[in-house]
Image 1 (cartoon, rainbow, N blue to C red):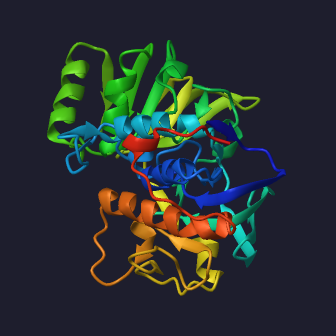
Image 2 (cartoon, rainbow, N blue to C red; image 1 turned 180 degrees about the horizontal axis):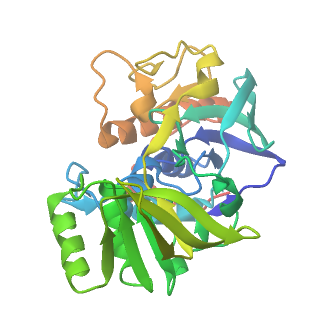
Length: 347
């Protein structure tokens, strides 16, 4: 898998909008049919909500997996698509779609252009973006290296080894990452405006046990107040209690987990009939009203739709098989089970 953020022009068989679990599985289904893929996502890492909001949260309705953490599911999907060497463009939102089946062009907020024969939209409930805390100059600290500055996601735990980490928030993401990073960070501080947390009880209990032995420090009830540093290098996070009394926390990185803003954004203007319920799609092919454009996962809408990950996986297979005729107009599709043909080499 190749991850890129550069602005260039590329060509592929299938352009996939969204790198959540359903978008990743679409790479697998397309790859099994010999179709190359490029994936675009607005986040800085793959996995969508599973990675950004609740990586430690257990999921129980994935066939064959009685229980799996959301982050582990994404890791398994990433491993599953490796044979097909997909190219994934992160930190950019798809802003435009022009052309027709067999000859589409997607443009992104980073200036990237992707020529594709078909487009599969797996955008979930829309493009995500971090809800930045209202701190003066916060963007100045967002460009530092791994494990430094202000980050809104954790891609690799080891990037935070030996770092002083301040986590802000009281939900699943804040508590999950506080527990995970406590094993590698020099110190983890959790800032929350209340003493109670809105995460899973078991994970909250683990966090409190780590707080009892001094591995984690709970800074409650406090709120983020300002950042201190020089030249774009974060040096400290200043917090304030409800009475305005301030406390300075020396820090290498701030992880504010206040949720993600989400919207279908430019997709609403692509003539697909998208509305509050998503994009209308054929339930047996996943094709939208625009030939060659497919909608799968939570973004697709049709009578009786169940917004489950396993439903999206099925729709990914429908879309890939239906798209084959557009990608390879001169070839007949001969259906074969994976147990028969194995894993073909990627492009």
